[in-house]
Length: 409
Ligand SMILES: O=C(O)CCC(=O)C(=O)O
Ligand SMILES: [Fe+2]
Image (tube, rainbow, N blue to C red; front, top):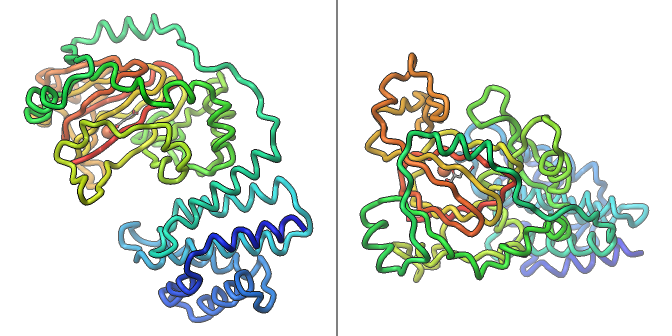
């Protein structure tokens, strides 16, 4: 029975079995906590048989807990408990299935991905879900060799977009060919001046490997990721959906129809899918002021989408290096000193986002905007852009694009 053998193998990924039971006391309901305990007994120790229905009730209960109130107020142990319950659900799914199939593995992987996305790493079994996801993903691609060959990324015609870019009344950002740390530090980093860094990504495996979307499909096609749907995050029709990368690539990335824009935006894809992390390199410049001795890494996020994704004018609280793996992005910037001309939203949630669309400003509403000094930059494959903390930026993808941002301080 292949699925039972698989469940046994996966069970061996657990380093400390007793840790799995540690977080159940953070569940307010005794009944739910007991059900989780029973399910763990069944899936890890041959305890009394449990059904998918029982573990589903635990997962659903915890899911509600995670979605009540503000995300940052959810106790970490409740999130860990969600990871444990997702693990148990995946095992029970394998143990109780009537037959082994590709679909079964895909469902099991989805369950682990939800545990990764909404849960939290355990203390002693910190890589448990990441390693299981990697293992299941490999098994799925062994079974599913029928990867369809799509065109690799080509440079699209940018002419029309370039006319818009050239007509922007803005100062071009400086660029440097792979500057030394000293030069970058002295001229740009200390002075908090943005700069385009050219030729610094030649050694990234991603620069060649990711051009072929089949590579991403093969490694990660069945992984569930959060996708932003809609023209941009301030738009009233904007929403977020969880879907597999495969569905995202087919429905939003490769499809040329004018349907909803989908954007895998600001997601730490590399923590979720460690194989992809091997293809990128943390820019050396991030060592400036980062506490490497204490192993503090930058926050690394993926930005993967079709032509036309827009990140509205906003600023972030950390220094940023935005690395362009492929595709071209138009970036408009303003210094933090010009905030007074940029009409930030008044709500607490959007205080870092401007109400002005810098490409089509409504000067009747935002007349002070003309006093702001606009900077612009065309970020092409292999370019990185240093965006100092609190600098405003507005980003438009001019063709299919994959960027990686490194926020650090
Ligand atoms: O590339 C984008 O769409 C936005 C990137 C961004 O805002 C960032 O890296 O902070
Ligand atoms: Fe940003």
